[in-house]
Length: 266
Ligand SMILES: Nc1ncnc2c1ncn2[C@@H]1O[C@H](COP(=O)(O)OP(=O)(O)OP(=O)(O)O)[C@@H](O)[C@H]1O
Image (cartoon, rainbow, N blue to C red; front, top):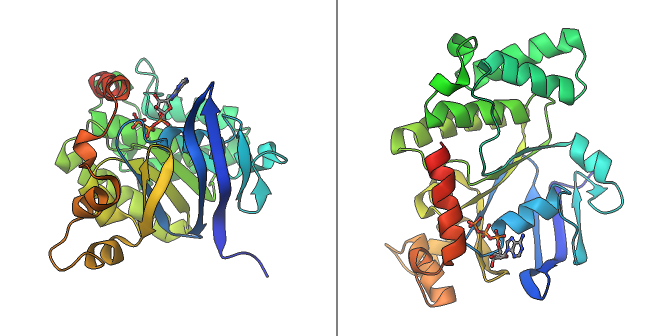
C-alpha cells in the first residue's frame, strides 16, 4: 500500500562548520496537506528546505519525498518537487510568458506540452492577462505568483515555498494564498512552507511545526496547539510557552538583515 505521507523526515540534521543549524528533526507530511515550518530568523527553516530539495547535504538522518530518498535518489526527488526560494528568481527584462517558457525548457518539457502548461499555470496564478507584460512592471505579489507558477510547470507532487509572502502587503498575501489553495485543491499537491508569520501559519496550514534553534519544539494543527493552552490562546502564546520568548524577539540579526534585503528586492 502506498504511504499516505509525501514527506517523511527522520532525525535530519545539518551543521555549518561547528554550528548545528538543524538538529535531529523528524516529521511526516500527509499527501495534499499544507505543513508550515514556523520560527524566527535563524531557526533552521531554510536549511531544512534546502536539504529536502537536495540543494544541501544532510550531516545525518534521512528523509524521503514521495518515497524517494533525498540522498540515494536526488534526481527522482527533483523530478517530483517544485521549489520557490526566498530570493528573487524571475527576470525583470523578460515577459511573464518568456520567463515561464525559459523555465519549461530547463525542465525539459516538450514544445506541445509547454504551451499548454504555461497557459494553465498563468491562468491558475491569475496572470493570464499580463502574460506579455515585462516582469519589471509587476508588483511584488505578481512576481511571487509568477515564481510559483514557474515552479508548477512540471506539475510537482510536492511544493516547497520558502517565506512565500515575505514583503507583501495583506491584500497581495490574500490573493497569493487564494491561488495556491485553488491549485492544491485541483492537484492534491503537498505543500511545505516556511514562515515567521503566525497568522499565515494559523490560516493556511493543516499542521504547524515550531522551529527554534534547530529543533522542532512543538507540532500539531494550529487549532490543537492553541486549545492545548486554553481558550483565546494564540500561536504566539504557544511559541512563548515552548521557547520563553516571542517569535518577533528571538531571531538573529544577520538573518533579519537578509530578509529585509529580500523585501527591498521585491
Ligand atoms: N551558509 C551558511 N554558513 C554558515 N551558517 C549558516 C549558513 N546559512 C545559515 N546559517 C546559520 O544557520 C542557522 C539557521 O539558518 P536558516 O537560514 O536555516 O534559518 P531560517 O529559520 O531559515 O531563518 P530565515 O528566516 O532568516 O531564513 C542560522 O544561525 C544561520 O545563521
